[in-house]
Structure formats: C-alpha cells, structure tokens
Image 1 (tube, rainbow, N blue to C red):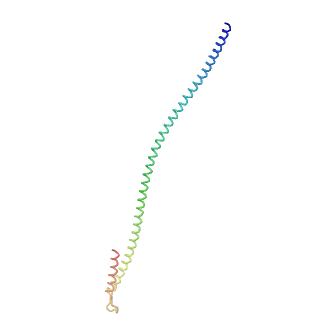
Image 2: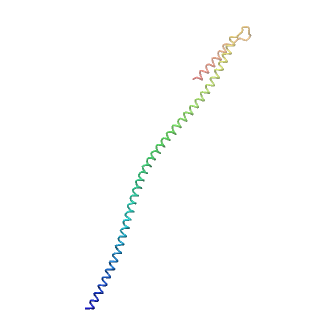
Image 3: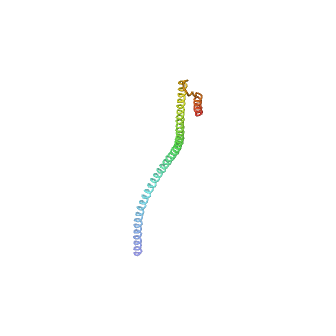
Length: 163
C-alpha cells in the first residue's frame, strides 16, 4: 500500500508539475496571444490609415484629372484662338501689302499725270504766247493748227491714262 501510495504521490506530483507547466505554458501563450492581438490591432489600424490615404489620393487624382481636362480644353481653345489670330494677321498683312502696292501704283500714276499736265500747261502757254504775240510783220507764220494738234494729243493721252 505504501508503494502504491508512493506511486500515487509521485503521479500526483508529476501531474501537479505538469499542470504547473501547462499553466505556465498557457500563461506564456496567453501573453503571446495578447501580443498577437495587439499586433493585429496595430496592423488593422495601419490598414485603415493606408485605406484612408489611398482614398485621399484617389480623390486628389480625380480632382487633378478634372483640372487636367479643363487645362486641355483651355489649351485647345487657346490653340484655336491662336490659329484664328494667325489667319487674321496673315489676311491683314496681305491686305496691307496690296494696299501698299496700290498706293505705290497710284503715286506713280499721279506723278505721270502731273508730268503730262505740266507738259500740257507748257504747250498751252507756248500756244497762247504764239497766238497772242503773233506779229503780222514776222516772216514765220504761226502754226496754230500744229500747236492745237499737239494739245489734242496730250489731252487724249491723259484721257487714255484715266481709263
């Protein structure tokens, strides 16, 4: 009986030791489990922060995309406006060049007409001088018809230039 009792005491001691070891192991595991739960909570917190950051970045990307589209529209309008302005400038430059050419041509024609008018005035003066100062005693007869023909020719040239 004593041997049995001793065996039971030993078994009880071993069981108590095992229970103490299991309890110590359970305590260590509980501590590790709490640490893991803390780590999981920290990871969940980081995950939520990352999700919030991603949502903020998505909003920023959306706003930036909208601004980019608006800028693209403005650039397109500016491009059309610039093309319109370039076309208008080109047209006005061509009109100015034509106007300058017409002005130069008009000045040239005016100068030619002024020269012919001066010649006509000189011919008239000469004709009048010969007719008014014609002296019957002179040996040279006045060629009034020749002078009138020269005047008529000059007037005809002026009329032709006007057309």
